[in-house]
Picture 1 (cartoon, helix red, strand yellow):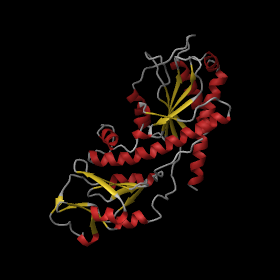
Picture 2 (picture 1 turned 90 degrees about the vertical axis):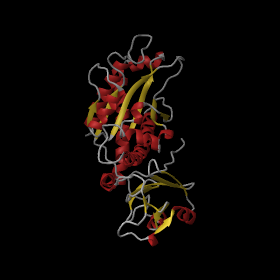
Picture 3 (picture 1 turned 135 degrees about the horizontal axis):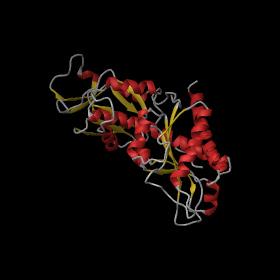
Picture 4 (picture 1 turned 60 degrees about the vertical axis):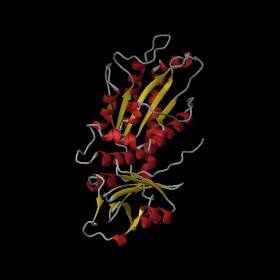
Length: 349
């Protein structure tokens, strides 16, 4: 199977927490005099800097975010801020990027950071403690219905409860977005993940297709085209539920962009972990798929969506009705989660 190439490393959660303290307000200001303690000799114009290090850049005064990139690297800086990130690693500057006398200036120290072999080599810090399970559909929304009357919403609920049991046996804290046959909006579902600061969000569904021959488990994670998008970060940053309020929307946008990239990496890795687990246990399963489902885009945590099988296929529908098969699916998902957790436990030693 084709391996996933990461463009970013997982960011240490402690560093991430400090981001909130270091962002400054970022209305574009062209200084006539350098702020106290800063010297022009400590800076290069962005044109000189990029020429020296073989980089390209873009800057828009509407968002105050400086983007620098090469064929193999990318970085982002926030004007007047000491925080930035390059190739997935957060770092802190002693001097901020400035807009001085109509020119963008970058601190010379940034060059040393870019050339440093330490950048991008942080060990991933990720511990799975709280998992939110989302049984798809419910209430007035039955989801797919088989020709024999099996409703997806009921199947999702049963398997989710079995999955909750399997994960709790393994020491995880588990929260269901719904435990009854109730209707929840998509926003409410991802709101549960945010409320409980979920380390993982797993949405449980069953599939259907016009062709009754189609069958098999499918695992979805967010499409890479929806990652590293400032527009997406800006949209999330404007949502009332995002904190802290003291940050400007642009500062929140770049912070969220870093977070979303981290979550994407973990989501893909979790999807592959489940894929190999299902496959090793004898399930028919496709390689992980990419999609832009709402619950994957806005859960604020590593998220996957599992399609347990096709209700439109009579053989799979028959299997999905059986309690034993439902529990096997739940156990397979739990084992995939455990596998991912062990991988990061080893990395953090």
